[in-house]
Length: 183
Image 1 (tube, rainbow, N blue to C red):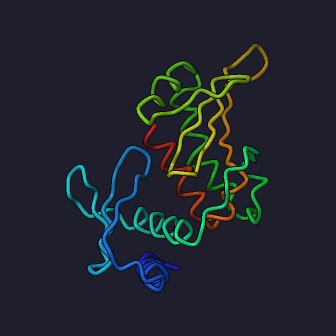
Image 2 (image 1 turned 135 degrees about the vertical axis):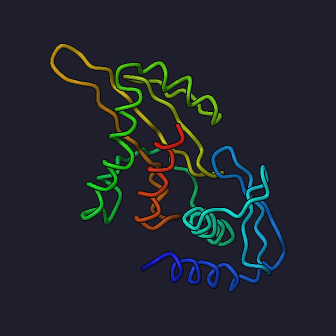
């Protein structure tokens, strides 16, 4: 499904909930104004329309939020354990894990510093690990392990198990790619 069809479907689903008033939503560090009557979402920092993929993510999130977000479970799942990912792992790895390794593999401490821009919280455990809230109630855990004598650096992105009740798998791939690109 192309962006036009996905946008129409997302707006139709959102508008069917009869949420006709304007509202705002935080996505990473950006605030967006949702204008249902105009079918428009604007970034408040510069009053520019959000990109199509961002609009779709925001609308999917808001639909689920209005219906009731599943509670954060605290159970972290790697992408491979999120239901229905069979055909998506290669794209997920290329868009999210590989860029993080390229950027921070030789300097894991830089990941911690970069994540501070997003209000990230340190996650105690092995390697350099941070939790970033993509949306309210949608935490994402990034783990980066430094190289050692036997292996090169490695990374992974983990999702709270509640994510499958919020976003379709395609959105999860896009969310991970956005984090990797922005961090």
